[in-house]
Image 1 (cartoon, one colour):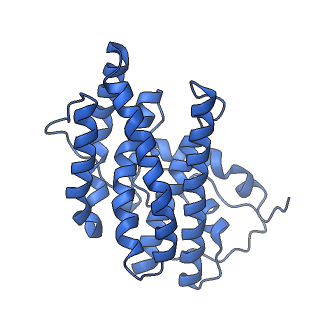
Image 2 (cartoon, one colour):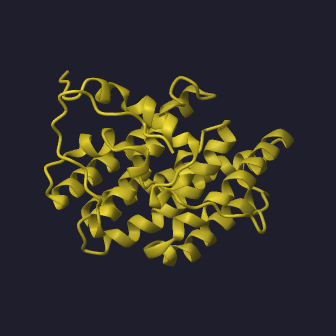
Image 3 (tube, rainbow, N blue to C red):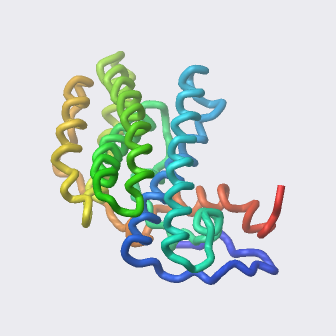
Length: 252
């Protein structure tokens, strides 16, 4: 995997160290939200309707806000002198630990909504759990849970509408589900294993109403949580980070 780019001359940011424990968990959740925000932002001015354009932009901003809060929390807990911009803009592809699902390209609108449903259902369980944990991210999770509940309603309605709509919309939704289902297993590795049952109940209920079939025996991709990504993340980071890497320390 290639680095998204090097830092510029005169860059005196603190050297990166391998995160561990709670910092690593916070960074993984922050990375999920930052990368998904960037993906959803690609729909701005490209969505099929103005109302959808605005809705996706707002959802992207929700994810960005959560990412910023988590990066700030992780930086403070790490105590290495790094800030949210360092964590978002000056880590390489290999240092990002987002789930592979969120870095997948948008494709058509059906694919974006299927991806969103699969991830929204996961984050709803995650934030509900973390908001009750009393940990470093409890306050952030409580606020994010409210947003995730709206996100899940939005994606669920659209998946049902597309899946149980015209022949073409149903086929597009099923194709997207067949492709993206292979990235869902990674969401429930490690501490998140306990979310799978509740996630499955929500997702299966929506897919049944959408008349979509859950793929059977699909190979599950993994590696994102360990920094091993698809080719898509490198391209995304190169686009997202190039200004900060080209002009480190730039002030508007």
